[in-house]
Length: 159
Image (cartoon, rainbow, N blue to C red):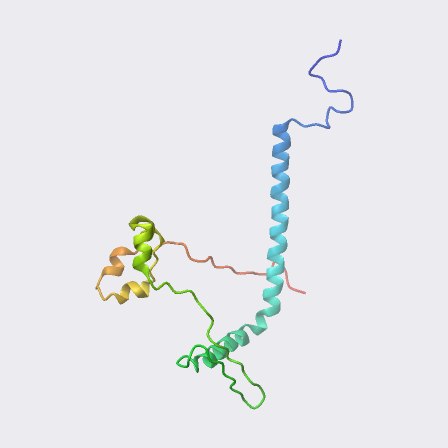
């Protein structure tokens, strides 16, 4: 007589119990994730090495671009400019559009105190700009929420 719990011949190892299968799947997922992360790290390292000679030039370029844009800070926002050197011409476009809230009181009255305060964010500069000595120190705290540092180092000499 055949047992009801017994698997047919040839299927004894084909089907794993679901607990074992889910552990196996979790291990496979973790290994695949580690392989994908390793590929991203290696690509980032190769790009950093490739671009390293240009870091100072890129920083200088951004400084120069900021200076050129800055020449027109006091000009009308909608105007464009075309300053030029001996070899290049620059096109400085009009200022981009940004949404600016002009009626905070209306928002406060519409959403209520709790929702309004939950959505409020002040910069430290604005807080210090209120001219109340000690206010910033009294209402702020240091939290470790900034970006993480990242350094990429080759494991073996680069070819």
